[in-house]
Every structure is written in C-alpha cells, then in structure tokens.
Length: 232
Image (cartoon, rainbow, N blue to C red; front, top):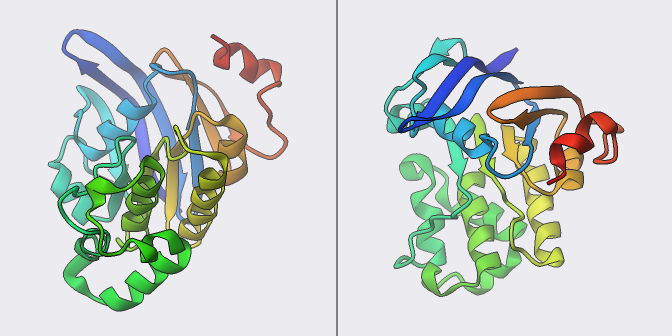
C-alpha cells in the first residue's frame, strides 16, 4: 500500500526553480533512499513534503489524502516525523528531557526512554547533560532517538551520517535499521553505499528531477547510470 505519493512537484526558493517535477512514492513498511549530488533538491523534497517549502504545483499525498502545502504541524500530527540535517535538539534541555518531549502525549514515556537508551547507550550516560553541550555525534544520536520514540508512520531522515566518525555512523545505521522495523523511511544520504544498504528502493535526483530509480539490490556507485550523476 502506498503511504506517500509525490506527483509532479515543483518548488522554488524565490525565483529559483529547485524541484522541477519530482514524482516518487514510499510504500507502507518500506525504506526509500533519495540520492544525488549536493544542491540537486533532496532536502527541498523533504521540506516540500513537510510543508516547510510548499510546492507551487503538483501534489503530495499521505495515506491517500492530499496534504500539499498544509501547515507543518498538521502533517506532523498525521504521522510524518523529521530528523533534519541540522539536528535541532533543544540545547537548553537535558538529553532525557529532549527524548521525553518527543513522546506523543507522553504515553509510554518510560518504555520509550528505555528503547532510546538501549539503541544509544551513550545517551544514557549523558541523560542529565544539556543537549547543547554534547558532541556533534551525540547530538545526532539524540536527534535520531527523538525520531525513534515519536510513533511516526513515516520518518524523513536528512543526511544522518554527515560529519560523523565511522564508529558513530555504524551506531546510527543500526538505529535506522531498528526504526525501519517500526516505520517507513525516506532517507537522504550522501554516503551512497550506506543509503543502498539501508533502503529497499532509491530515487536519484539531478537538477530537481528524478533521473533514475529502482531497487537497491546490487546497485553501486560504479554503475554507469549512477556514476555520471554522482561525480562532481
């Protein structure tokens, strides 16, 4: 069953035409990667889904309902979560407070805290520290933990491995596997092998349009149809 459908979405920043007719889908229980060079429209696609950069034309449907350009809080309430590239933790709240506020309605907070700490033991050790004092890798763990406890049907994840040490990337990848067992994912990831490993299918963007798509099995950055769009 289709969970998310984008059809011919066009989006702009001022007069700059960033998305030029993006169409894609994410099925229920599926992980999908959105890949391509920097600046081709991947993050803008996520922002369009969330209503942060409303499409000027085209449609965004979630569970069959047209949510194009709706207020972001309505889309979030419908079951769409976001782990942004900038992490955006509450810097003046502790680690534990950050996780607690992500639990919708506070229901099952203790169980979900245990789940977050089980996924990222490092966060348990720093549960009473203010999030703004954490390292970049720890903040990324916290951002993903907040997504993990949010009971989202669809989670939009933007560049989760960027700037992280290999050991932290491994922990982040393991956490995303865990999330994928509970929710559908639309993942923007510059690390192409990681994206292909995490996702069931992919869409390759170039200049605001989808130029390639398909299943991830056996796909590598050395494939000719892929390489020419990933190289600088």
